[in-house]
Length: 219
Image 1 (cartoon, rainbow, N blue to C red):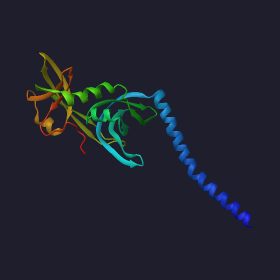
Image 2: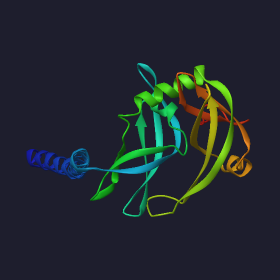
Image 3: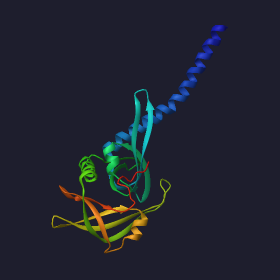
Image 4: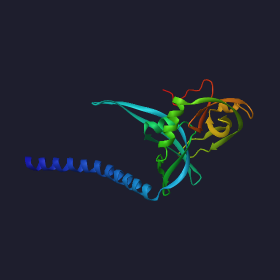
């Protein structure tokens, strides 16, 4: 009798474990399948960085930091939002409103990832700009708004851009940059602005706006 009870308990425990593990394994299998399809069949779309933050945690080996970027993208006229961990160099280089390329899966557009393979040089130039950039005079050329409508996968957002021109080494350059709405409303066509550019690569530049930090992600 005792043996039967023991066997019954073992069978019951096994059944409970199986009931818990099967959905988890199915979910993991589905995620792996979607990841495989994304690499094989993913389509490239345009996106924008929404925000970034540092996820700090502690392990036995010490302090660990994950650098997270949140972004939005369109597929099939629907707006989606995702966030993912990225290398620190990309985290420092990609600010709010920056245009990025996103690879998403047509049959399951919420499955997506940032395409950062071509960001290594951009991240290096951004680092050098902060360290070695020179300040020059510039002028606002124009500005525009880019509206992203709300969907079940993401909230409504509006990005604000200023286009400007500046001179370095007797050569004229043009750039556009995402800015906060307050700066967008302040700087109109023809307004004089200060621009920080990189001597060895003058097309790498950013607006110097009073009160705006060099790193846009705030602690």
